[in-house]
Figure 1 (spheres, one colour):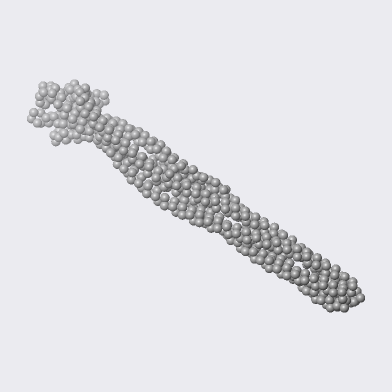
Figure 2 (cartoon, one colour; figure 1 turned 90 degrees about the vertical axis):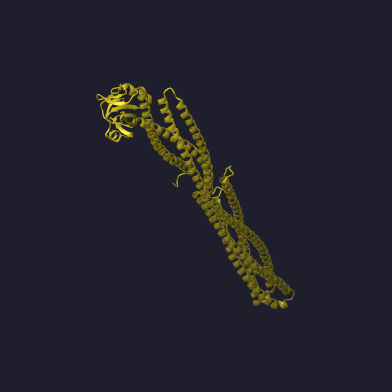
Length: 618
């Protein structure tokens, strides 16, 4: 049953309800009608029996008597008197027989195509009518055929039973009446069933069509198509559900849009990080080149000092070499200073990008948190849908009570139909008995008309109740539209959205961590830049001292030895400064690698975030 559509369920339930009402009513009606017909026929037989005796008394005045072994009525011989029995049979439509003792002497009953004169009455009837002197009314065997009969004893003037007066109605006549009535009942039931089927089909269509559209919309949303817009132009619970679904999809679409925008911003930031990392690496290379050149200058300076120590005679040449080395060192210091300035600018750009990425990550985190709240609201909506299911159960209960009322109304119609059939039958009997004088038929026909009016009124009440059932069914099915299947679909959608948002929130958290790492790396780079600047300042100071020393050596050769000692000292400091710069450069290389790795991981996370949101169509 779980794979059957709601439309078919409503159709089956409605038709089953009608069938359950029609079958017992029809059965009860048929049995009641059969009993009523038998009772009516017996009453007719009694009346016809009295009528027949009255006709005989009027036609043949006098007492019943046995003369010379023959049965007389007054002076009229009744043996083989077929005229009187035929007359009464024609008037009443019954079979008529006059018995002398227990033997038929005048009858309309035939056996093998001939009048059954000379045959005897059944033993059961004989025992009651002749043996006990009582009338017999009921079913009896008449020459092998079942009849509804009326037997009365015929008495002579002394009260002795000398014969039997019989009037009977064939059981075949009763069976024909019953069959015709059953056929009419079956045809009526089929018509009612067909009308109920058509009505249920229309009602189920008005309910299932919006539900089918809602199911398709949910399937599209489940596949990630958030452009779906459900159109249900009703003001009932189904319309409210459609509006709630549209608002839910719009909220999710807005959240996904914000997440996509945030992922694009994050991707751009990652690209900037990567670019700045490249710039920082290039700046490191330039600084290393400058440091190498400074180191070369220091080496040259050391060699020249050694030459001065070996030979004071080469002082002029040494001074020239020192001056040249000092100029070269100054040039290298300027280049290193320029490279450091570029590196500082790159670090500032990286810091700005890190701050922007942190801000973007915070916005993404806020959007993800808002998405979590929306998911909670969606789950709350699922709880509301569950409450609607219980409300639908109450509506269906009301529908069951109204269906019970329909059964009561149909019972009234059944009783009216029963009486109508009885009166119609009586009217037919009266018409047959009265012949042309149909005054009694008019009275019966009037009663039939009144009962028909009551039947019409009851039918209208049934129509009104069916309309109420339809309204109740509408309310019930509209409340049931948050069915178990749809609730599960909505819950799965909410769970998927929650998982997606949880994944996004995890990625945002990882992004924040990486951004903090980048910020720390940038801080370390900034600190190392300070050390590099300080080292460059030392180199510049040394260069100035070298220039001053060479000037003093040119002005006063007596102070050459002292100046050479100062130069040696300065050369040592330059070497130390160069080592510090080299160490700082190596640290900057390490930081640059960390920055590049973090930028790459950030770009991968941005790509993953973009792929995660890419399955949604907004």
